[in-house]
Amino acid sequence: MKLIISNIFLLVFIVIHPCLGQKTKKPLVMVYGSDLLAFSAAVQSAKSSVPTLWLVEGEQFMPEFANEQVDLETMPNIDGGIWMEILMEMAMAKSPSDSLAAVVKREMNPRLFQNATDKILRNLSHLTVIRGEDILSVKQRKRDWEVQVSSKNKYVVRCVVDASKGQTLSQLGEVSWDDKPKQLQPLRALSLHQVRTLVAAGQIDNMLYGVAISNILDGEKAGFFNLRDFEEIRHAAMASSAFRAAIGQAVGATAAYLAFFKTSADRVDIRKLQTELMTYQARILPYQDISIDDTHFYALQRFGLAGVLTNLNKEKDFHFGKEERVSFEEVEPIFDRLYSRSQLWFLDHTGDYFRWKDFLSLIKFVGLRGDEINQQIEKEWSRKLGFEGSFDPEAFINRYQFAVILDRYANPYVKAVTQEGDFIN
Image 1: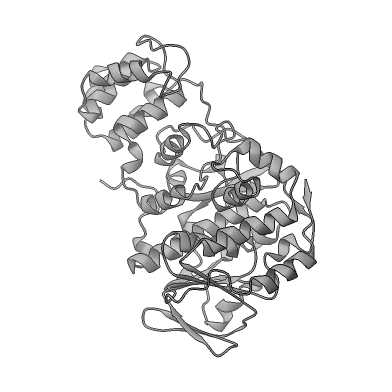
Image 2 (image 1 turned 120 degrees about the vertical axis):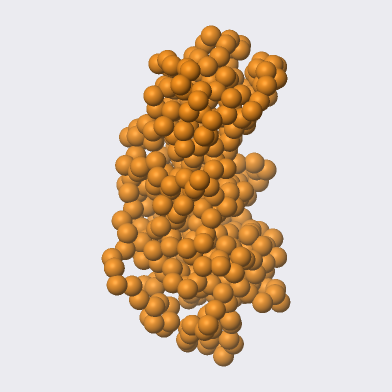
């Protein structure tokens, strides 16, 4: 589906809203750029309660929607986060819906798009937006950055996000890298360690790719963020708008993290960062068979990011595989790392695939729980859990049920991991 947003309405938008969200709070994060990625980075930083300054590069607001036709056709179930928020604002919907998002993208209306982004910016008390300023200099100080603009104003911020065309601020700030940018990999090619560190994902040319924290921090130095790993994606015709927005949201959350906690990149807690992104509806793992309005959507996100099942992410189109069974063999090595007590359980229990009676026995053993779990699951089977059929201890448990119950009673996602995806003991 194609979208053409005219230059006329954008010019009107700029005149009417010369400085959306203008506040007096001293900014801690500055974003420079004008595209959807810059918009998402600035919005997420402000959503994370960090005073943020967005200096819009040039005279156009998200020019990629103004100067050319934008292809919004995507694989199913990949819209999330700030991009989904825009779509749902356009539809005046209160909660995210993949089916509704598909309708909005098919019938994209320039005026509704303007109204949606306008409202998002207007409601952010921690965001200041300024247009028409050129950046004259960027200087690193002891613990922050000093940015001077063409109006002669100076801003001292903890973090700078260079989302400009050609990464021009890197040259002004004399920030350089000796190595080559990291290459993004398809989701289905990632190891469990890499999956645990994901912060975004999206579509490029009918393939889903993942963005790990290492891709974000590859372009970070002392609080200065260059988008070196994403330069080609930003201009690739086949990279979806949802992907660009997801990358921007992840960068904005990371910059806000450094500024808020007054810390360095090597001390970023990946679980805290992922949780912050999911708080604002980020879709880090775009399982093609899991809709965003699924009751257990974020339980499945947390389960996937924990990296419990070794073959969960190998499907070509990245499916969760809800109905597949769970084997003893694939679970035991990870459980031994997650729950030290599980080693004793597996010494006394063997089998091919988990039945409910086996799984609940394991959960009660590692989680120090009693038989009340059986009673609670049976009581809530259809009404709260939304499982089909009826509870039968002898029945095989599928991946969907396994993930939901494990997340509820022995959540593996809370296990801390390094930025390389190793469990921290």
